[in-house]
Length: 417
Image 1 (tube, rainbow, N blue to C red):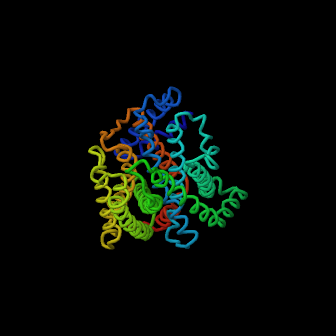
Image 2 (image 1 turned 30 degrees about the vertical axis):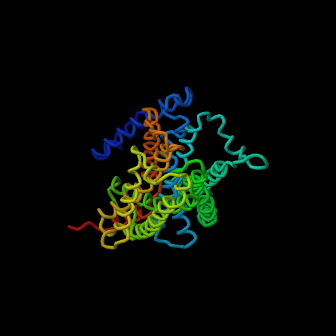
Image 3 (image 1 turned 90 degrees about the horizontal axis):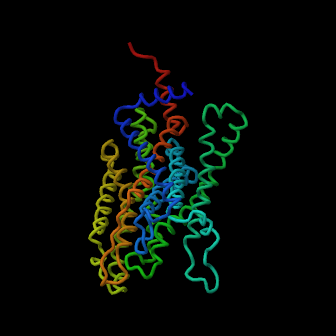
């Protein structure tokens, strides 16, 4: 035990001062997640600000954001294994892990959001489909698609784990990992099919069908959420890999891979911006007037500004990622992928916060939501645990094959005198 503790201390002391500070903060948030998570699960949702007006807690923002950003996993898998774009190979392991973590903690947040976790199985078995059982529950389709895609991500993660030098030395495990890699295109295709459906349903479909809510109702919301997931997810995957390289202080992904991702993300962000502007125009001209309301009157004084922030971030991402001279400069590339990630995250904030703030009747006041300290710790603590797991895997698993090759090449190069 003493040797193990000494090894942890040695590893911790090897980090820079800024990384140590970040680790202290994440450990603190993780401790709060455990303490307040137990409180919520055992003593109920009375410790939150949830109500009939805001039936979704602070963590639903984490749910929607993580699912959307995790969309980069199915996007990269489809491009690599179906379109055979080998430029994404150096980052695919990291992408699979990030997708796995995003979906894992989506389920974690949903456990808190349910309020009665022992009844979580209701989502699988009570679809409200059939005669005299309307409206049908879209959440049933979401839960099944989420679960099945999460299982696919688990399978896709197995070859990454089996590539560890200890496991790879066992012939049977090496064969299993190699065989799974050969048939991975099947899982990539199935994952794309499942992910597209739940991205649309959870991100937009289940909100857009609410014909009593003037802020949410419109049929194109389903498709907008799919485009958003592809655009934001690709930026998020590149951002995480870039930050991992900075922490590890070495090149873990070749520049060409980052440039390819930047172009893909920039194109999809442009498609998202065009679609989003179309969405706003159609809402303002067609759907909101059907409620005898005006678009300007649906902008909450608390959260209405999120629309403008989202559009600004999307424009910044498009310029930084599509203009060649910008995306090939490190600081502009970082600005682009960070802006793309934030643009989609802010769009989910807008869905939950501004959408719930708008009343069904024009003579009522806007609602506001004030998350409790328990909600903040559960959401931020969950994200901190994700970061810690990713850091640990980046250090001990072959997430970045290019890093190992690059390091080996440097070791083989004779030192200059």
